[in-house]
Length: 329
Image (cartoon, rainbow, N blue to C red):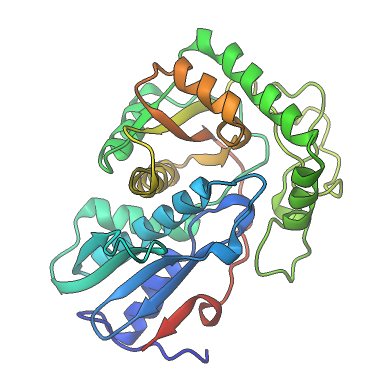
């Protein structure tokens, strides 16, 4: 490690390294990891790294900000689990738009059981693109996931059964629109189907099986056609739990909080033994995102669509080293 990692506020150097590793475990579009951290003696600052943007799929950088919000939630939880209270200032300087948050590990305070449970789930959370078991997620867990979103000033909408065909149709419409765009498919190929030595992007081993006509929910081919043919009978589950993470406003602040809410939902799901992945195309295509907003009532801005269920183990996605994402004064 060439970048010196020293103490920050109430955190020791080892604790700072640990909380940064947990922060960088957040999910991001195509595992692009669009964040940077700057440490001083008393502050860890989170910056958006626009050089890691995915401009065709995410031209307004909405998913980039969501990913940074997820990293911020991980950072907050990791600091809390270390027995330190973080003072968090979101969007602290209007004239510095890429500075998204400043976190000051200010004072000692015992972690709550929820802090400990969710922080422990950070390294276990995976984006699982493989088929889930057909077992339904019980209603009691629906409530827990909704509460996780509400804790971060967002809302988790779970469409009713009669709304699912419309949601499937929107997924198909968005999927077809994106695959008809040569720039989109070139960008998708750039970020996916990577070999095991890559520090970013989606590895072939993490891509899941190739989509087949009988699949009821459209899933992208993240392997560039290199994934193994699935075992006979191992189709995707017909009725996954589909959740729409929504914010009450739109814009950078709302997206950042939505990213924190999204990650809290994903960690709550992980802690409950559930797996998750994303159906991103619906919110990436403007027309289908607008129709999705109408489908969930029109009062929320849809930020992410999650697929949740009981899955088999999958490997962790690669991560860039802290040398690549951390600076220190």
